[in-house]
Each structure stands twice: as C-alpha cells, then as structure tokens.
Image (cartoon, rainbow, N blue to C red; front, side, top):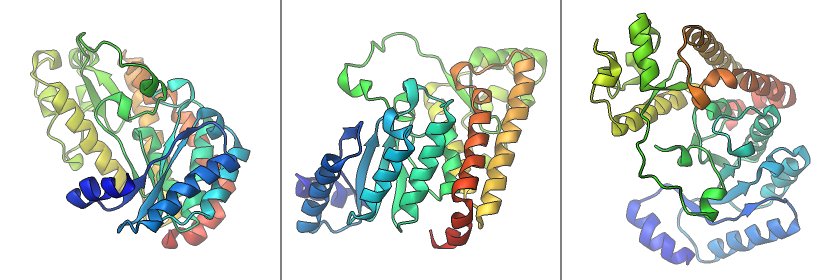
Length: 309
C-alpha cells in the first residue's frame, strides 16, 4: 500500500515529502510506539525516495498531559524519520482554544521534535497556531471550511450534518485575528468604522475589496469562494512573516500581533461588532500566557539553537 501511494500520488505530484499513515491515539505507550515503528521500518524497507513524515494524531487528553507529551517526544526521538505531521485534537471541539495548558503543551511538543533535528507540519490549523512560530514549526496546514482548520475525531466517526441549509459568509480581519459575518460589517459601515476592518494591501489579497468599496457589504456579490481565498492568502502572509531572524524578535512580533488584535477587537466589541465563536478577543490571553510560559520553559535553549532549527 505504501508503494502504491508513493507511485500513484507522491511521484505523480512531485510532493516534497511522504506522510506515513497513522492512527488517532488517547494513550502514549509501548503499543503506540511499536505500531508507528513498524510503519516507519516498512517504509524504509521499500525505499520510498523522499523524506518520511510520521503522522502523530493525539487526543485532547494526551495534549493536556505534560507527562504524555514528553513521553511522545522520547519515542519520536528514536524513530528513523525526517519529520512529523502533527494533528492535535482541540478540547471540546473548539475552533479557538481557550485552554492554556493545551497550547503550551503543543508548543512544547513541536519544539521538542524540532530540537531533535526533525521537521514539523501541524495539520488542521487556523490563525491561533501562528504562535507555533516560536517553536520554529516548519508549516501549518489549513483550508477553507472549519472542518479542515480544527481537528475533530467525530467527523470521521459519523456522517457529516446536512449541508443543504444556507451558509453564512465570513470575512477574516487579519489585524484582529478574527472573522466576522457580513451583517456585522453592515453595522460597521453604518457606524462609519469600516476602516478598522479593512485588510492592508501588504497582505496581497483583493478578494475582500468589494466589501469596503462604499456600498453596504451585504449588497455586494462577496461570495464564499472569495471568503476562503481571502482567509488563506492572509494566513499565508501571516505565516511567512511570523518567524523572525532571532527567537527574541519572533516572540516580540507575536506579542505585538496579539496586543494589536486585543486592542482592535476591544474597540469593535465596544461598538457592537462581534465575531461570535471566531472572535479572537476570547483567546488573546490564552496565547499570551502560553507564549510567556513557553519562554520560561524552553526560551533559553531555543535562543541558543534558533539558527540550527
């Protein structure tokens, strides 16, 4: 099966690396280690001709346990792989995570793997995981709908809900790290504060320009496709700008980004502009706390190793 995947998919599309299959786990133990080791050894035996990345899919319980996370790091250190495709399950299927323990453990896990000289790509990601730049993550993988921006095991165990109903269109405001439904943009237009939501030209996205052309946003032909493309373009630029030349400048940049988002979302909320469950104001403190805690735990070694990671 691995050889078929290599020939039919990876070679055809000239992929940069081969992601080995893995399983969702709620316990890091010898059985988990043995299962992954078998897959890795088989891949090495058939000589897959590109870097191998192991899939690491971890339950919320594992992600909240410092002991389990450190045990995973110990096992991964012994694996003959080039990198990891990491899929962490968020608590309570939340899109934006309000649990600082979960987030600090994710930072710890990513940095632990990076310090082994391996690459790390984090799947099912959104803007909250820009903080993983501080752990020198190599990439985050995101997508259009929320079901590819936040992992949920339930989506693989039950059929998807009926999608025949009308979907809401969202607008991603990168400086606020938040998303807003169009009726709230209408309110901003009515109050004369739309300029606070406009995406800067530096993001290279023109997909949302029509929302701020002077007409009421809901009267424009802003569509779902443009919403997705705008989000992904902005997130791409934010990712590219997140890792700086030094650990300290990266930490400073992330803190400034979060403080800016906090200031903007507070102003918008005071004027009735809210992002519902995609409003970053609900998790700004979580990210600031996780960054501060990570700096205390790993800061010294990350500063020292930064240019080698």
